[in-house]
Structure formats: structure tokens, C-alpha cells
Image (cartoon, rainbow, N blue to C red; front, side):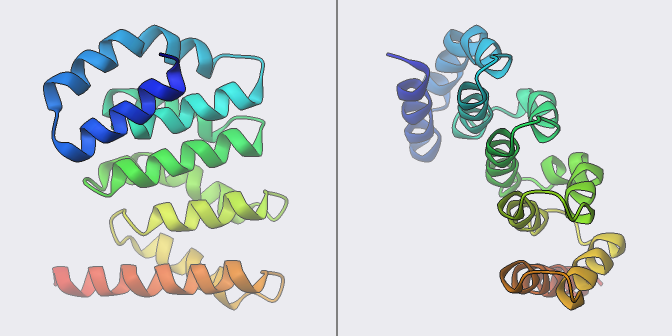
Amino acid sequence: MNLAEAAAHADELATSGGAQELAALRTEWDDELEAAARSQDFQERAFAFRAVGMFRWRAKEELLRRGLDDGSPAARGSALLSVELLSREHPSTVNSVRPLLHKMLSDPDENAAVRRLAILALKNGSAQRDTIVLLEGLAAGDDTDAELGRAASSVAQQLKRKAAEKR
């Protein structure tokens, strides 16, 4: 079994409730995942960051933080996919990397797909005013591509509803 097969199996276990088997699989693949995340090959790094989410590996959130700073858009995108997946169950994952997500959204030179993934990850975080203002600014911006603007507007509205429900 390789890392890709192990990650796919971990994803199955996570969705079916095989917690003990998943924990054993994490222990078995810990070193390989760390090595892949440090690889010179961006594709290996990208898969390692994606595997963190597939393994539902909250203990590897610092590794995802490094992935969000990776020089490769593919690696950053994979890290964002894992952040989004992990944050579905708990907003702390997004909240802990919120400044990095804001930085990605504020950088017009950032890859457009990466920016859209950052927006989608933010929907699972806490409804913070600075995030909503940033998203609304992107939605209204003249230099924002239409798809990015729609995504920003949609997530801003979701966060506003989330904030209103807490009141």
C-alpha cells in the first residue's frame, strides 16, 4: 500500500466510523506523510497536504499551515482542501489560519483557484467582521473575476447568517 491508497482507506474509515483503525493507520503512515510534505517534488507535497484532510488528522494542522505558505499553487490548494474538510466539523481549523487565508485573498497575484478555495474554507470558520468585510470587498471589486466575486458574496452572506443566529 502506498500513501495514496492509505489516504483513500483513511477517508473511508473516517466516514464509516472506524476510529481505532484510522488511528492505527495514522501511526503507520506518519513518517511517510511528513517526508512527502518535505519533498522537493511539488506533486508529492500537494498530495501530502491533501492526505492530512483525508486522514482527518487534526494533529497535523501545523503541517497544513506550512502548506498554505508553500511556493506551489497546487500544494497551497491541497492544503486548503484539507483545511476546508477538517473545518466542517470544527471551525478552529479555519480560525487558526484565518490570517493566512486573508493574506491569500488580499494578494491579487495569488492563483485564482487558490483564492476561490480560500474563500470556500472561510465559510466553515467563525463569522468574524473582518472576514465578512474582506469578502464583501472582493465581491464588489472591479478587478475581481466574476466567479471569485460570486463565491465571496455567497460566503459573506453565509457568515452574516451565522452571525445573526448567534445573537
